[in-house]
Structure formats: structure tokens, C-alpha cells
Image 1 (cartoon, helix red, strand yellow):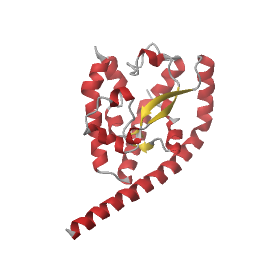
Image 2 (spheres, helix red, strand yellow):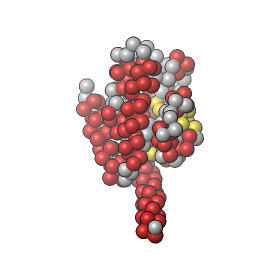
Image 3 (spheres, helix red, strand yellow):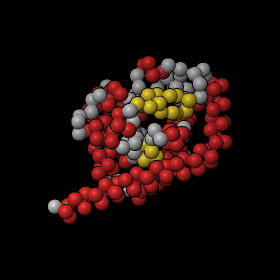
Image 4 (tube, helix red, strand yellow):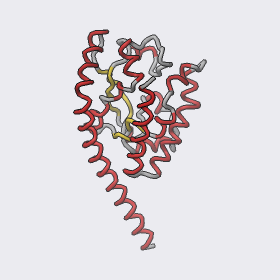
Length: 219
């Protein structure tokens, strides 16, 4: 009994230490990325602003840690009020996407403002991608466990479904495909990460994301 209690206490201490180490890692890396990316970000901001109305950033409410909503930032890649036609992006040739939006989506540059969300504490660099409330409402009680950690910019599910937009673009019913096929598979991958947290795992995911993005950017 005593041994089990000590083991449980040690486990909780390891989890708490990991959370603090992960948060420190997130802050340091985010500051570095934002400083390095700043010149490119300024150029992109001017391009977006001059091409179409609607502002440089797109702010969308997503569900975060413990089910608390927050505004996730992206560089705007669609026409103003495009989300009124649906929250899913159907392929890279979605008519709502602007010319600058096509470019920044192709090179995954639209996601960089989320490092600001990381600094704010809304997100982590590695964690389950945050969903809109519409889809969180469909989670089972077990699936809602992914809300017990901070959502992230990248994760195993992001790597597995790197070309998710293309899958949806080829679907007759994109929403049905997402809800019945893609979303459950992504949640299952996220569960694996939650079961085995660790900074080493986070670094592996970041490296794999970096490697994945580079060859994609060359095409």
C-alpha cells in the first residue's frame, strides 16, 4: 500500500516537472522562432493587407485546455468572412483562398502566428491540434481527455494527416469524412501522446515536422 502510494506520488511529481519543463521550452523556442521569422512575417503582412480586405491575422475561437475557448491566430489566407461558408478547408484550390493565402498555406507559413498563442499560454508547441466547439461537442467522454493538456501547433496527428486538405478536397462529403474518419484517427494518435508525455517525444515531433515541411516547401 505504502509502495503504491509512493509510486503514485513520484508519477505525479514527474508529470508536474514535465509540465514546467515543457512550458519553459515552449517560451524559449517561441521567442527564438518569432525573432527569426519577424522579417518574413512583415513581408507577408504587407502582401496580405494589400491583396484583400480583412486584416492580416485570422482569429478563430478554438477549444483549449480544460475546455476553455481561446482565439487562435493565423495569417489570413482566405477572403473576409470565408468561415461563414464552413470551418473546413476543402483542398488547396478552395475558391475562398486568396493568392497570398495559397502561397502561405503551401509552405505552412500561416501557422507561425500561433507561436504568439504559445507565449500567451493558450497553446504549446507540441500538443493536440485545437478544434472548434462544433466538433468538440461530438467528443465522447473518453475523447475529451485530450482537453486535459494544452493544444499544440503540431503533433503526431498533424504529421499523419499532413495533407488533410487534399483528403477533404477529394471527398464527396468533406464534413462526414472529417467527423467519421479523420477526427477519430487524430484523437487516437493524440491519446498515445497523452499516455507517454516527455520532452524527448516533443523534440522528435518537432524534428519530424521540420523535416516534413521542408520537402513539401520545395514543390
